[in-house]
Image (cartoon, rainbow, N blue to C red):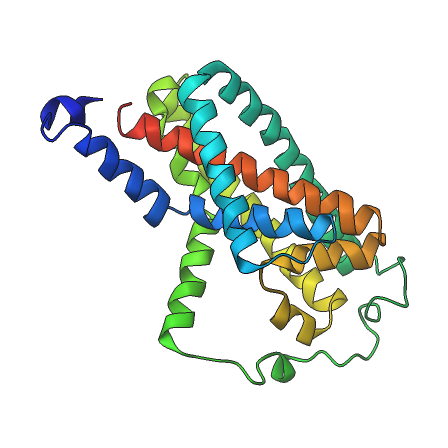
Length: 249
């Protein structure tokens, strides 16, 4: 709010600039797109590019209205969705442990061989046909960076955290190590379960393909992708709330 007092003319200039920065430059846009893709995938709908964008914009608009007009309701919803994300992370990590350490016991007609059995996957074949352009490399680095962007969200609301020094010193390193380990297991399970060509063509839907192959058409193709979509929506809610707190509104 202090920016509105600092720059009162033109009216709402500061608010408009911050809104544009959050929507156009913030990583909330990518999570809106992920929500759209996984939601359509869960309901077996083949959308057009316009439908993807409309649903993504609709999600961001709805979240903005909820946080702007119903503050306590928005906080309650994002807290509930936070538990959905915790459940999803636990499910993905257990799936990774199941694949990497215990072998595969799902539908063997739809999955690759168990670890230790000869398969078409190899280190050299993984990089065949790769595009090493600087634009794709920079995009990949940004996606990895954004995977850990949640660590910075606590800095936006430190004034509302009890004993912030202790929290930052203990929770942040623990979260970093835990998230890194879970990401490693999840990525390793992708390569062991999903054919390499499907991984290259799946884009953001690789998680849905993993669950579909492990848990079948109903739970794997509908329930878990829908949970990922809800989790992405929760991420958009938290980031939007944190950015508003950061800018003093």
